[in-house]
Amino acid sequence: MQAINAKSSLGKAPKACKFCRSRKKKCDKALPRCGLCARKNRPCEYWKPNLSTTSHSTIASTAETQWHSSLLDQAQPQPQVIDLATILFLDPDLLRLGQVETLHAIPAIPQHVLQLLGSLDEIRLTADKFFGHIHQWMPFISKKRFYDLYIQPPFHSRPDVALLLLALKLITTLPLADSPNPRTTLYHTVKHFYLEVEGSFSLLVLQAGILVALYELGHGIYPASFLSIGQCARYAHALGLNIGHMVPATKVLTLVEVEERRRIWWAIVILDRFVSIGCPGRPFVTAHPRLDDLLPVDDAAFDLGTIELDDFSTLSSPKTGHMSKFSLLCQAAHLLGQVLQHISRDSTDQDIAWVQLDRTLQSMLAAALDVDRPDYDQITFIYSALVALYTPYLQISANTKDSNRAYSQRARDVLHQIIGRINANLVDRQCFLGRDSEDVSPWGLYFAYRVCGMLMRPAEKAPHGAEVLKSLREAFQTISVRWHVASVYLELLEAQKALRLGA
Image (tube, rainbow, N blue to C red):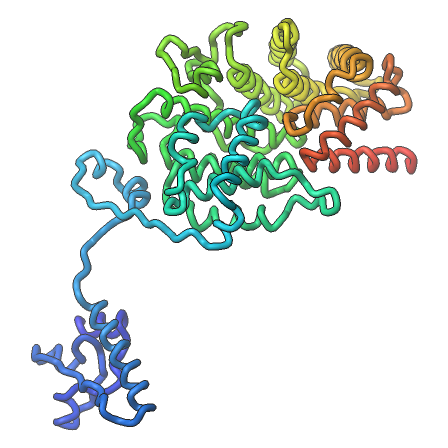
């Protein structure tokens, strides 16, 4: 049995062993001992190549020697070292005992990745661009920890750091005017490098994955965006984020680290809800947040690393003016999840849940508008959630039962109110069109697309409808400089127009 195992795992020697050759016995050439020697329990010695032959024989002999040595090395007992991820999945309790030697595989950073990252000054410019624009509405990376730990020359030896830096470059790179295809060389490089580094089981790998998913969502890359968000959720589960009674992959020693992990989970929840806003019914990959789940703390405190225990509030806490922008966005995402779950039911009958969602979203919208400096990204996210709630009932026919007609009329009235606000802000005050396109989030594009589709209907007589439609189309063109999906929405509007003309 020993010989059979050796033969199956190590192969055969190039020549018969000395014992079999001297006695003219048939040798199976198994390593490290042939079958006959193993049965007789005697030492088994193979002929060593003769190194004093011709040059051709020397080359062949050298190759045989190396091959033979490598097989014998494989036969030697090797120390058992298990990687961290395997232990976390198979028996995480071993980590509590602290008696297992773990292996941390560190792949080399390819040269072309280092070339794409550029010099340290270029990396700092990329980081400054990210924290100056995208971080303002999606703050899930600790600014203080990032600059203290990762903008340093040793990043060349950390593949997970290099991956995060490369993902920052990807998300901050604008589409090219002459080549708007977002599936660029940089995009493919990040995706491929992610596959190489994901085994390092690092929080930075997860943050890079979220940036890639956000890039795909903002540029209309489907189904990659949908699949990437699912991958991020699974990676977060593996790391133990927002899952109780699990052994964490790394020790968390500061409130800033705890807050960063919480924000990462909320970022995945936001993307998980928003990616299905146009096609409700697909299951979420993250569980519905609980009312006792903690919301992100004040954004400024998070950036400065000055978090106090008194800063925390839960999802059930009353919405107040001191809540951070990101905290309010998380609450809106929670409501969007409820909206998508509600409208994906088989029955389209309206009920108390529909009315409650309508009131809650209206209350959140009123609170978002009743401030000195309204936040566009939060407001447009709420608009998108409202429109998602109303969209199934905007085409209710006249012969539908009275209750559904009443809800349809309610949806139209609210959308006309939204159109009026758009006219006052986007058309009259030009307050949005002058905004830096790099500061704009993709949250409002869905609601703007649905509003445009409604205004394009021949029977629609909304006040200022023509002006609002024209301004929204201009806004799509402006935002397409930042997010390619705006151009996709414009093409979809053209398709709607063509279908109506051909009907």
